[in-house]
Amino acid sequence: GQPSPAPAHPGPGRTRRVPAMAAPSRLLIRGGRVVNDDFSEVADVLVEDGVVRALGHDLLPPGGAPVGLRVLDAAGKLVLPGGIDTHTHMEFPFMDSRSIDDFHQGTKAALAGGTTMIIDFAIPQKGGSLIEAFETWRSWADPKVCCDYSLHVAVTWWSDQVREEMKILVQDKGVNSFKMFMAYKDLYMVRDLELYAAFSQCKEIGAIAQVHAENGDLIAEGAKKMLALGITGPEGHELCRPEAVEAEATLRAITIASAVNCPLYIVHVMSKSAAKVIADARRDGKVVYGEPIAASLGTDGTHYWNKEWHHAAHHVMGPPLRPDPSTPDFLMNLLANGPCGSGLPRRTCPPFMRITMVMSLWSILLTRGFLLHICCDDLTTTGTDNCTFNTCQKALGKDDFTKIPNGVNGVEDRMSVIWEKGVHSGKMDENRFVAVTSTNAAKIFNLYPRKGRIAVGSDADIVIWDPKATRTISAKTHHQAVNFNIFEGMVCHGVPLVTISRGKVVYEAGVFSVTAGDGKFIPRKPFAEYIYKRIKQRDQTCTPTPVERAPYKGEVATLKSRV
Ligand SMILES: C[C@@H](CNC(N)=O)C(=O)O
Ligand SMILES: [Zn+2]
Ligand SMILES: [Zn+2]
Ligand SMILES: [Zn+2]
Image (tube, rainbow, N blue to C red):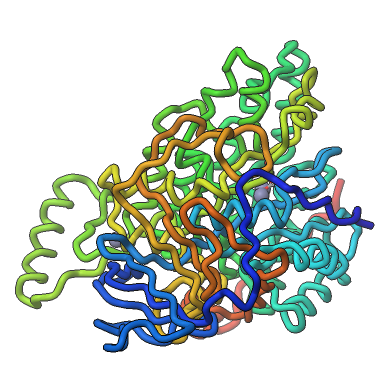
């Protein structure tokens, strides 16, 4: 059975209790630049009863704002779809501890950073019921969340019961994503044949398979080796599971999913090696998506060699951050090159081929007069894997790195870190930023266009964003419960000024107006079009058929009896 809900934290950040009747039911966001994944335009946004009612110009009635309509001036600012964090672990009982940001504090911090929805994980013990785990996580989250949320469910063992419960979760509970761990040997790890069975069931019921891609056997052997060498500090955590251990499992998962023709989602992509495997698989046409996280996009594994034990330990997560300092830039490049007008395949063919290809390509373009849509989209969404532990909790592993509870922060800083490292750096434009922080996740997890877009009929999850303002990230000022921030001191362009959740201003100029439980669980239907179209097409037209041939009539050797 699972423990009871963690106690709610008072936490930093003033919360102004706004009496329910005072919140206006209608908002008019005026004069901002509305940015969706495919298009930007200066427009007013009218919101009523939690939904976008109209987009257009001069929506303010001539007589001025009528009673019950609040006008927000967004002139010179951006108006973005609220971020969707695809990967969190609030108040997660794990490694003899429990993550310190709970569903209240964690979702407040999300809102402060411009994220208006999180997708967390219900994780049963081996042998436990998936449905019971789902209901347990629901009981923790529903009373506390300040923003909308949903749940992936983990498959930590295999049986006919698990297969059946996956089907029930999809049909009755609004789950359409299941995470299988290839690491955490003896705790959550499943083996290849179980992956094959779980992927087959995901395909059968229209879910997307997610994997934690690391080779759990190599990690176990690597850890023994490091401890035997007397390496007990956080540096041992990375040394025992170098990026090849992540890349190997990534390729193995892709190979198994491809054999099943099941859509695959690689969570927390942490290394160049794994990212290259995913990019190559996508170029081969595989239906696979990669999710780098704020940590792997914003910092690196050199911190494991920091002389301050607690500093190094606070960066311990699985898979580890990588000591190769070029990793964040590399991952951001692969994240940046999404479906674009003129993106040309960056590699995969020798130079002379490329010249001829480019020449022929441009000649086609010019004659046809349209921009070729080459979709690179090597990495697709961004999460945080927010799973935070205070220093005293991390100290459970002060003498043995395998005992350091794994996990880092990110839920509050993801949007600013990606704006700074991705947009301000010139790698991606504002539309791609929206795609990777919100829209692509909504499409993959079948939330779109209710979530992930500012359009008439969509939920009014909106952020008024100041691309020019900067903020300095620090544990001293962040709204998370955890007492450390892996982005400490980072100055980021891109600051949320106002966060709106389902039409309510919940965060403005540093002040919260949240109510625990205001967030809702968002159910998700199976067979998301965005991922299943190609799968279904392949089932129809790519299933192999036998060759018709006359039976063999020649001599057949006699079976030699074993001597
Ligand atoms: C157990 C969970 C959180 N911990 C972590 N990533 O270090 C995960 O592996 O995603
Ligand atoms: Zn994981
Ligand atoms: Zn592209
Ligand atoms: Zn995780």
